[in-house]
Image 1: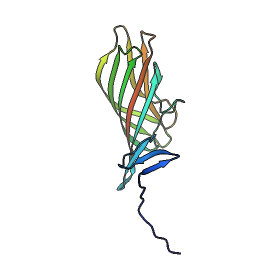
Image 2: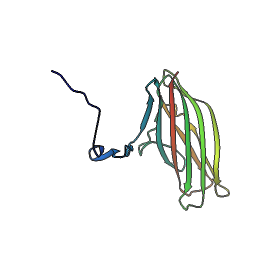
Image 3: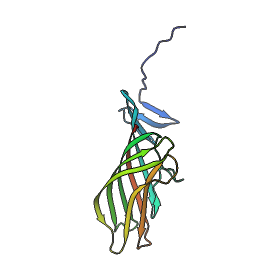
Image 4: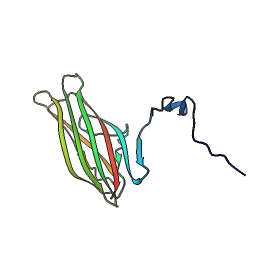
Length: 168
C-alpha cells in the first residue's frame, strides 16, 4: 500500500496535553530541556538547563535534587551564569563559570579546568557566599555547590547552564 509522506505542519502551533511547545511563530515554549544537535556531527550536542537552590546546597534541575546528566565518554564545555540574592534583596552575587569537564566510559566526571568571572559582588559585610563546580561522585552527574556563611538570612540561587558535549 502506497503512503504519501508529508512535511510536518501544525497550524497554530504544537502542544502536548494542551501545553504549547511550539507556537505559531515557531518559538519553543514550556520545554524542560532543549537539546540542539548538528546533523554533520551526531556525536555532539548542546543542552541548556535552569538550576535552583537555597543557602548552602547543590543546585538542581527540579525540587527533588536532580543534577545535570553528563554522557559517558565525552568532553564537555559547560558555561553557567549564576546569581544569588538574599531574601531582603539587600545582598546579591552574580558570576559566570566556564569549565572543561570530562566523563569517562564508567561515568566518572572530572573538572579539568574552570574560569570564574565575578560580575557583581554586593555581599553584605561579614558574610561569605560562594558557587563552585560540583562533581558529586555519582556517575554521570554534575552541578554547582553553593555555600553561605556568616548569616542566617536565606539566599536563593539560580543558574542558567549550557552544556556542549562531544564524544571523546
